[in-house]
Image (cartoon, rainbow, N blue to C red; front, side):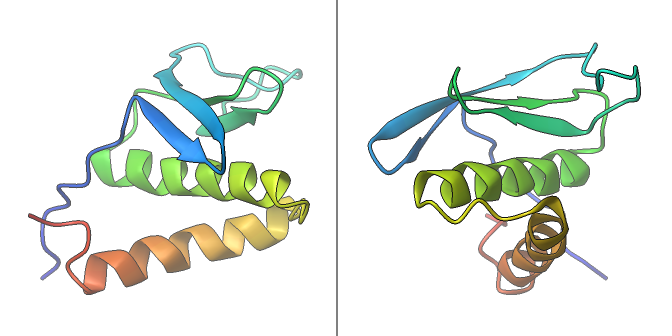
Length: 102
């Protein structure tokens, strides 16, 4: 049985010298009106998360968007496929090693 996740999603997170604000938006959608779990607004330095997700999914989404911000800052510009693969792996690794639990 997996432990309950106690990861705290911060209100702000540093990526290099940049500070990204983390906020929630119940109206988060694509330009085509499709629901998004999260997005990274690079010019505004914001990570936006859909609030009506389980805590575990919010944490995974936060890590996903954080990987986008990190890859952009360091000039890697990882494609969605790479971030989409890495985020759940990172989340699972941190969780299995007790790094997300109190």
